[in-house]
Image (cartoon, rainbow, N blue to C red; front, side, top):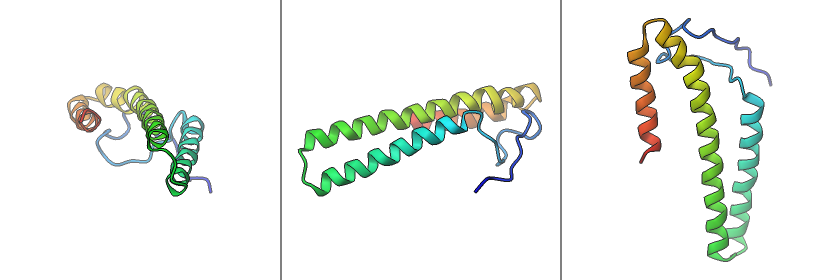
Length: 108
C-alpha cells in the first residue's frame, strides 16, 4: 500500500513539528530493515533450537550493527534535509535541540 504523502520541501515546516517526510533512501532503508527482520527470525529460531550461546550472541551483535547502520542513514538524511531546512528558515536552534535529544539516545 503506497503512502499518499508528498515530499515536503526543507524549511516548509519546522523540523521539530511532527510531519510526514518521504525518505530519500526509502528503498535502501526498507531493504535493510527486511534483512534485519529476517535476522531477528533467525535468532529466534536459534534460541528455539537451543543453539550455542556464543553463536546467538554473534548474531545479536550483527543485528545491533545493522540497526546502527539504519539509524546512521536516517540521521544523515535528517541532517541534510530537515536540519538544513530548519537552519535556513531561522529555526536552527530548535532543530539542533531536537537532534541532540535523539543523538543522546544513541550515546547511552
